[in-house]
Image 1 (tube, rainbow, N blue to C red):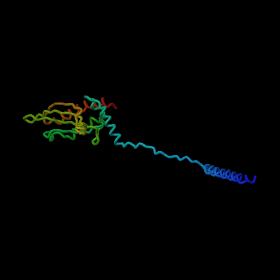
Image 2 (tube, rainbow, N blue to C red):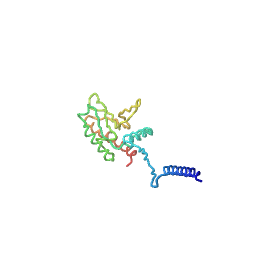
Image 3 (cartoon, rainbow, N blue to C red):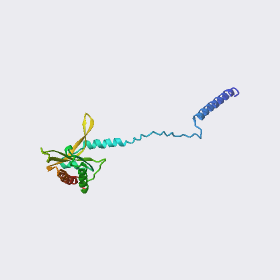
Length: 208
């Protein structure tokens, strides 16, 4: 029995070492009881669309309007003309007998009586009263042609570039003659008759 004692002691020591080794490994592998796992949340930046400038919006509206433009004929061209500025042109040979200012005042008064807005600045279009004519050989009778026209700015495109010009969109005419002492009266009458024609057609296209 004494001979087996060293072997027994060796076996016990080997078993104890194995147990201690296993305990150490297990202790290292096991997390401490107060170990807390935290989830890291990462914020992904969101793309916010930039605000479209008003100039681009206006350009888009103009482009859409041009793409869908309607053809206007005759009196339809007066639709949408919100205000007018009056202009008068007479030949130099009449300026000592006829006042452009008085003719202009008479035309503006006739338009205002009919409810047509007049603006000297910022008007949608220009209403022109123009007179052409000549005296006879004795310079006692003047034969004339009077026109009432509506002019406005128009655009056209050449190789992708816009150009602006003045376009006549409506006109009416009147012809007559008068003696040297009646010429201003006759031109005023011509202007009044043309204004009546214009007012009737303008109001039909732009009802109040």
